[in-house]
Length: 113
Image 1 (cartoon, rainbow, N blue to C red):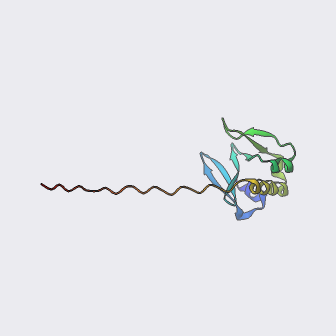
Image 2 (image 1 turned 45 degrees about the horizontal axis):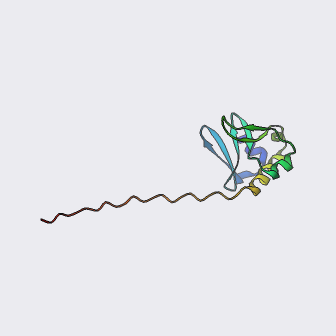
């Protein structure tokens, strides 16, 4: 993770969080990639495909859709940074998290006899 973050040159704009034993990479609060089994998987977009040409595609984990598997691109910091940026620019903004539901207050029933 540290190598990818350093190579991208995005500084604190690129954040990562552990998820299910692997990592999700966020650029400007949008998930742009995953690191699974020490491999970098970029979310597939038309803009990313245009930038990368014919990237190798593979599932990030069993049962997942195909993502762009970046390998040689890790050795090209400028290309890696641009791949993250063009992917982020075409993804929709993250959905707002729902507000937690407040529990209903219990009402006491008084009995009058």
